[in-house]
Length: 584
Image (cartoon, rainbow, N blue to C red; front, side, top):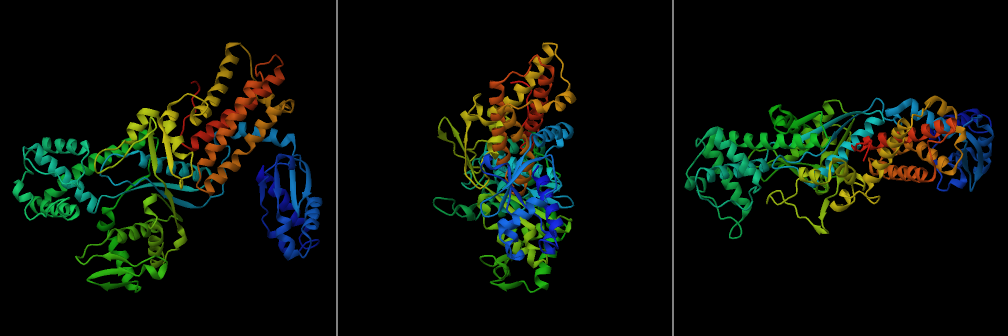
């Protein structure tokens, strides 16, 4: 309805262009917004005020000209000029009836639009290091990223979902060392496990599988493993301790180092894939960080920086002049030992995204990546790519509460609640909805007891119950051997003049605007808030009126209205990855 009102105003401006108003107003794209108070109508347009200066007229005078030039439409009951020059639109009953008809006609695609038609976007999300199972913090990024991708698809964008697999670098070295040391323990060695190693039970499980496959082929004497390794914390430094262990492991195992590393990577990545698929999250591509170096893309990026004088040498390292392009400091891209840094990989990775043909690069990252944006944008600009093509959405931490007590999480120590455990306890639907019912930039306190409750205070239960209630009405229709004629019902919508019916129809008509707004703002919580309001409108209607009345025309009309409500609830829930059960 919003776009239809904007079209009416646009037609009026074109008819006034070159006569009562300057010719250039024909190119103006008017914007219509919902009114804050329904007593002033459903929509308001401020275009008269924006035209006052170029037209050299009083805004209220311009508003009057536009009002008089508006084409006739059965969607508009009345218009009025308010305040300094707003044009308010009061919709007719026919407008709401048309919207119910559109819901029946369009079904699962009702609310979709073509705002992003012709544009491609790569949404990278989760991308957790494959060093352990996904925990509840990762779950929020998964639910948020997937919901945003669904919203963008609903707005016509060509969306590519990608998981960036950090299968290179120091954390993978620490993972490999942790697995190997557990493997050595399983062969009978007694050793002090490093404080900075990965301690979860899954490490021992991977080591056990490795032992069953290779036997004692990877065994090396404990003395050689710890030779020249400095003291661990607290007496020494835990970082230098683990790095020395990794260096010894690489030297002692040679090519078999990759055997250990790949055992861990394959096992953990397989677990992550299965976990996300069970959570309703799938990816078009799992992009390997290793492939950046293997394909030569990292070297290509570094050479391009050198060619364009974007780097300099200092203390034996190669530094990127990131400050010249808006970053807070310059960044090392090649260390003094000749190894490229993760910053070089990040720049190369995003250059690769652009080379793959994506217009927009949307990264969903944890809140601890707040410094990431400036350096990657600087890298893109240095590569000759538009820095504004990168958009980063940071997801704040999710804090889990069980029985009012905060649950601590730490991947390294192994004392964490996994996403799988959360899903098993509260279910996928509650987890998905709870994760996105707050803005991504707000901390989320995840209340387990509320998520499991079957009360109206639980938003997922309240919304799903509205859908299930509608389904129960249609089962009752069948049980009572009554009939519903959908077309007759749509033709009789004018009989729905009760306040609850009018309010429900108004709420249904807002759905397309909600989807457009949620996608534009990357804000799936907008959909959740709307669904709660729609569910409330339906529950209120359900408690106040009988649907299966004797009057066939009225019964058909009411059933057509609640069928439309069921469709919108289902459509909205699908945007946030939540099911729409038919019974509860």
